[in-house]
Structure formats: C-alpha cells, structure tokens
Image (cartoon, rainbow, N blue to C red; front, top):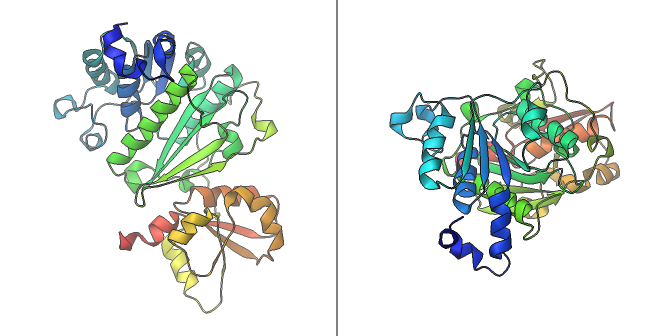
Amino acid sequence: MTPSRYDRQIILKEFGVSAQERLAKAKVLVVGAGGLGVPVLQYLNAMGVGHLAFMDADVVQESNLHRQVIYTEKQIGMPKVNAATAFLAAQNSHTKLEPLNFFLDSKNALATIARFDVVVDASDNFPTRYLVNDACVILKKPFIYGALHGFEGQLSVFNYNSGPTYRCLFPKVPKANEIPNCDTQGVLGILPGIVGNLQALECVKVLTGIGAVLAGKLLIFDALKQAYHTFEIPKQEKALHLDKLQSSYALDCRLTDATISTAQFKQLSELPTAIQIIDVRNPEEVAAQAYEGAVNIPLSVLENEIKKHPLQAEVYFLCQSGFRSAKAVELLQEQFPNKRMISVAGGINALFAHEY
C-alpha cells in the first residue's frame, strides 16, 4: 500500500489507517460488469480494496457506452472482463484483479462466493439476484443490492449481521412477463452511476465498520425528483435460513393477471364506475405527486392498515415505478384469496411520463 495514495481518506478521523488496512485485506466479488458494476469497480479499486474479482460473460456493445463509462468504442466486441481489467490495472496497479469470464449459476455459486468477504450484486436480472441471495444466506456472507427501474434506483444491504435477506423483501421470483429490463424499458445513463456509487459506499462501510450500514432498510432514489425515500424491511423467519440452492433459477414464463399496463389502467379509470386504487408510496411522495382517487397506505404498514378498508372484488395498487405495488400484491394475495389484487406496471412514472 502506498500511504500517500490514500492520504485524503486516511486523514478522516472516522476512517484512518486502520480502515485503510481493512480495505487492503478485503476480498470483494462484484457480480456483473455493466451499468452498476462499472462504478462499483472504479471506486473500490481506487479506494484500495486489495482483492477485487468481477464476473461477467458479456461483451462490450455500443448500447452500453452511454452508461458503462470505462469502456470505449474500440473495445466493442471485447469481453467486458478483459476491457475492465485493462482500465482497472491502469487505475491502480496495487490491486489484485480477478476477472471471471462466466456467469454465476447453481453449480459454481457456492464455491465462487465462499472465497470472498462481501458480494456486490450488480446483475441486471432476477434469477442471478435470487441465486446471489441464496448462496450468501447459506454461506453467511453479506451482499450489497442495487437495482434500476426506469428513473428509479434501489439499494440495500442484505444478510448483514443476521439482518433481512432479499427474500424477506421479495420472497418469490417474479414471472417473466412481470419483469422490465434496460433493453425493453430503457435506462438514463447517469442513474447506474449514482446507484453503483451508493453500492460501493455501502461495501466500504461493511468492510471497514464505519458509519451505519443500510441493513434492514430499502433506499429508493427517484431521479426525476432528486428524492430519496427509505423504508424498513421486516424479517421473514423462513427467508433467513436456507440449506441448499435451487437446482434451477430459470424464470417462470407462465402468464399472470396480477399486473395491468398503464394504458389499460387509464382506460379503466375513465369508466363511470369507480375502481378501488391504493397508493403504497410514502406520504411525502404522494404529497409531491398524487393520483386522484387513490387511497394512500404506505407499503410498510399495508398488511395491518388494509384491514381497516372495505375491499372491492378488484383492487389496483400503485407506486412510483411498479416495484412496491407488485410487492403489495404479493403480500396480500394469500391474505385475501377471494379478491383480485392487481399492480399497475410502471406506476406513477409511467402514468405521468408525458409531463417529463
């Protein structure tokens, strides 16, 4: 370690030499070298993480370049891990870099993750996210979660000091037709940089012990309003203990009627007969941009507060981007088996997209 290289963070009273030494001894695995993985790798490498492994079997594509900013036009077609290695080695020659040119699967996950102190999930798909979670639960490893959805980013630290896991938040893998991604929905170039940097920050906090780790909480960043919202993630006891991985994490491609498009929802809301709409956002989000006719019951209190409201045969759930409304449907379907619970895909962001 070159002391002068890290002077500006070592002189921080809360950080110091001891934290820098912990970084130097740390072994971190970053799953994915795309939009989220790139800023994570840049900053962990720059800050002095001693052993940095990164896993991805994709190649650089032109459509990556607006957000995956370490790659260049000349590297189109090159394996991402090779291009990333070239950048990171030039940035910090003291880091032990370990490029892994394959994808995580049920056969290699446990052996791979077991070698590292912390896992950063920078993947862009649900099967990998659930696989990372399950392997980390089995191996008792913390993992830093980040996700993107339209103009919204999400962040949390799961499985940290016996805290909630990803399955405490989302117990089941969603069906294939419920899942948007960057290819079909798009992503604003700067958003992965913001969320990825927040993931890197949480990783540094976990490794060094500084600050309060974002465990047991979900942070949601709304890029259009430059607003952050945080709510608690309750523990689900059955999600805290796993004995083995699933044999497959492939998506269930069967159709579901638990979601409705914004176009269909707008048509329904214009009918003379009033439909029942529950907005599960936090009160401050609703105050900033309300949806007429919706009753606000935040997701964090939904399971208890919903009992105070008479429910129609069909209930429509709304949030900022569709994540929390889908969670609401999942929470309540078993509680009210005779009601049809429906999430509005894309949420407020999609309903009011014409205003931006």
